[in-house]
Image 1 (tube, rainbow, N blue to C red):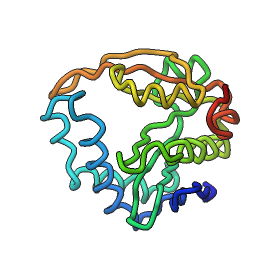
Image 2 (cartoon, rainbow, N blue to C red; image 1 turned 60 degrees about the horizontal axis):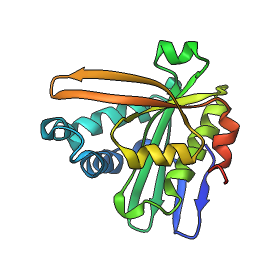
Image 3 (tube, helix red, strand yellow; image 1 turned 135 degrees about the horizontal axis):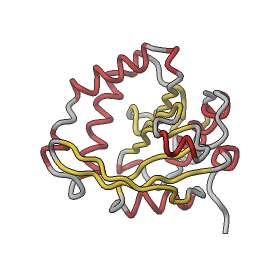
Image 4 (cartoon, one colour; image 1 turned 30 degrees about the vertical axis):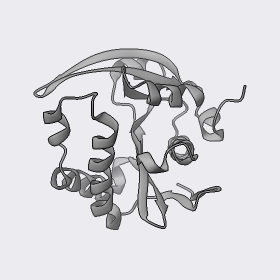
Length: 191
């Protein structure tokens, strides 16, 4: 993935490396708490610990052959956002020609509404395109209106819905899709 500077904020989007795993794990937990408080049961949020995320990010970042792309937004205070992407994991969405998937995108509350999320999505789209994917989707909580508006502003359209039952509760999510990753790579839709 190429490094994409985000202006006017002093944040740079760059590929994550294995040495980012500790900061990425802490960021993942912090953004989960900020994003999902009030949306998910407390037990589900608490299950995401720095230790569990550290093991996951160390495995992902240490396996270059997996095809998973991970981008981070780094600024003067450290990492403020991240995203990951790879091949589509949903057979239904793959059958609908969404061959790529944005698996995660999170930005600290203090860094939102400054272009960081848009720049991360553009970097993920670039990675997916470089990996041979032409279309992609992502899952977002159905009740997360702010995230849904963000994806719609980037041209995403609802292409699916699912209920995922977990030990701590049920997640109801909608899938947003982009039929042309080149459009997502360019940024927000105008108008």
